[in-house]
Image 1 (cartoon, rainbow, N blue to C red):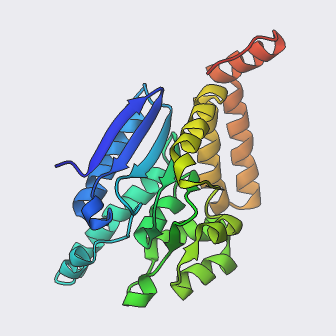
Image 2 (image 1 turned 45 degrees about the horizontal axis):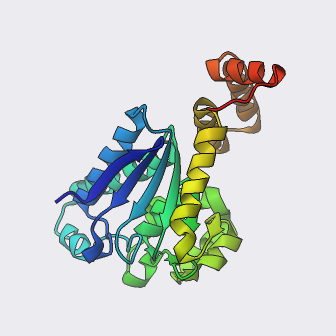
Length: 257
């Protein structure tokens, strides 16, 4: 049975984790199938925006602890290879050419919270809990730290990563980890409306280039960042989407992307 379902409707790709009996805990196979699904979405011309969701009560409970226990028998080199497997998934989502919306219908813990962290938008139900609980079992939230520091800054990242505590949806909304909290019955429709708005009102090329700049600028010096931004500005002016958008605006034409 496939652990990930992939469907496209109305230019929205829905990538659904399907391991509900294990609370969608991450093992090698689930991570592999997620990577394949995001690769497929990148090349899928029928898909403009991606929704990452899950079946069952939990969005994702983090690493499968039985799987993690088995990894303790691995050599350092084997564990490094497995760690790279997860890193590649997180980086693939964070730098994906299409916008990714996480639809969080239940708890997002440890690596599962990491999955939400690397998405571009996160919409959650009120009763979902978020947290990086690795320190409570003698592990570390290693890979997600890179992304969480960028997203929340050092003070809030330290609070979440070092405490290992669980936080409510409202708390992480205030912290800036997620974007919206909606009632359970409204979750699917809210995410769908957000995805459709992005699909219909925004240029895919513009969103791709903007997302790329957001990922790359923080690692540059101010001079490097400005030079890079200037180059991207010049590049964007020559794209078909920019030409089309400006022409439509000047001609007072309604534009549907």
